[in-house]
Amino acid sequence: DQQVKQNSPSLSVQEGRISILNCDYTNSMFDYFLWYKKYPAEGPTFLISISSIKDKNEDGRFTVFLNKSAKHLSLHIVPSQPGDSAVYFCAASPSLTYKYIFGTGTRLKVLA
Amino acid sequence: EAQVTQNPRYLITVTGKKLTVTCSQNMNHEYMSWYRQDPGLGLRQIYYSMNVEVTDKGDVPEGYKVSRKEKRNFPLILESPSPNQTSLYFCASSWGSGSYEQYFGPGTRLTVT
Image (cartoon, rainbow over all chains, first blue to last red; front, side):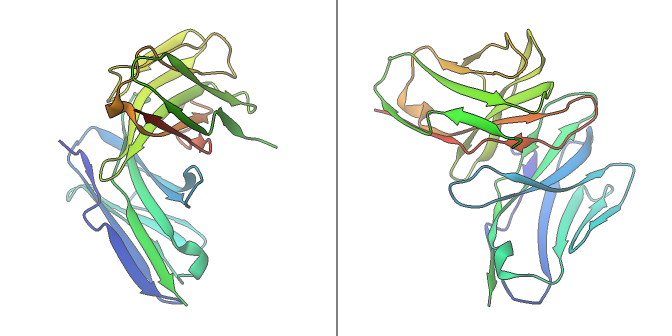
């Protein structure tokens, strides 16, 4: 049973436009959420995170929104750049554990 | 340079031949973890360690062993590899204690024939 779901395997966006990547979860015990970016032949790199006590966190062009009632989070990238083309994973961690559950990833392609 | 290193980067082996994938970090991180990445399944946590001599199972621990005798090293041991353990493996580390951001190694691609 996939507790963290990324239902869109891929997404294409024009350079300069907004990219919105979505993630749904089922476990109400998750209290910390993260987004990682992964380029081919490299390990994932941390992008941005959000605690369940917040509903928004911003870092430059990246903003993560959390809707706890809908068990949904999204990553907004504005403006999108060709260098943002990568696979994006969302991850969740239950409270008081060091376990991490990752989604299956969304491949973002930013078209120049 | 702060980094997580894994060795080997690529490995082809045969069923049943014991192997070890090493992981080392130079950031004095308390927390270390192993993941495997498979098509359509994303990253799945195998084992993690909160500190020296403290380890626990992730979601897919079957067929794997780990040890944490030193803070910087966290080897992954496959005592009797099987073809279903063919995968891309990542080691990661973080400060732990409320710090959730993990630093990942470059990955080890394992093929078991």
